[in-house]
Every structure is written in structure tokens, then in C-alpha cells.
Image 1 (spheres, rainbow, N blue to C red):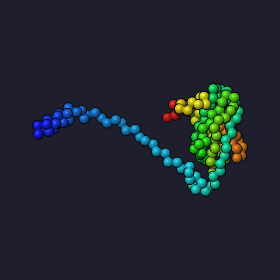
Image 2: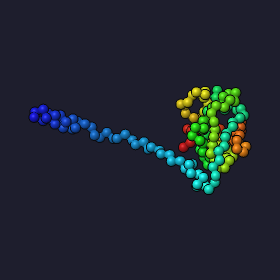
Image 3: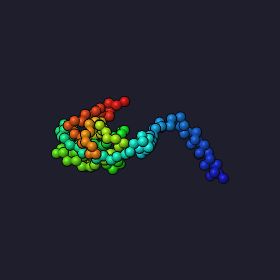
Image 4: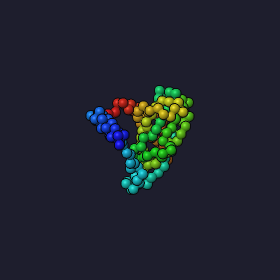
Length: 156
């Protein structure tokens, strides 16, 4: 019985000493992304078509030691999950695929980009690269005609 009373007294003392004025950590909002792209055909009434992207042209200022491009989904296209990352070597070799599903052929597409070696997978991208698109079922993208947009830190 004495042990139980001693335990209860210890708990009461501990609770009295505990600082409950410490504010809780700030809540970090979690973002859920629910894609509307899955149903673009139903929303627009247009048929989905697959397009293959072929990147050409050399822009040494942009490519440097290698250029990683990640396709950014935007109407009228979305990228197929396993085919939105492309690495371009300084000599123009393209590693990876760019496959898009679109309700009609786009005139421009945007990429998140960064300079990196082929196997550098974890670094953050730099900003947006916007490229004009030519061709019919094969989307031809000439790097020398792409426009470098703002870096991410410039967006607010």
C-alpha cells in the first residue's frame, strides 16, 4: 500500500513540475493531389492519343555536363508515369522516354530541369524550361529553341 501511495505522489509531483505551457509544434499542411487527368477524355469529350517526344538540337549553355528533364503535366497532355524523365548527354544522347497522353497535340510543353550527370537522381530541379513542339504523332522538341523560365525561388 505504501508503494502505491508513493507511486501516486510521484506522479502528482511529476505532473505539477511538467511544463504544459509549451506550444504544440506548428501544423504543416499536407497536400493531397487528386489528378483530373485520368478523366480528361470524359471531361472534354475528346479522344486520348499517345505521343512520343523526341528531343534534338544542342544547347551547350543549357546541357553542360548533362540535362535532366521532368515533364510537367498540363492541358492538353499528361505524362505516362514511367516516361516523364529524360537525361540528355553533352553529345545529345537521350536516355529515358517521353510518352504523353493528350486530347490533342500540344504546341508547347514545359519541363522541370537541372544540370546533372546521368545517375544523379536525388537533386532538386532548377526551374521551368518551356519548349515549342512540332511534328504529328512524334513530338519534336528542339532544345536550341527552348526558353529558360524562372528558377523555383523566383516564384511566390
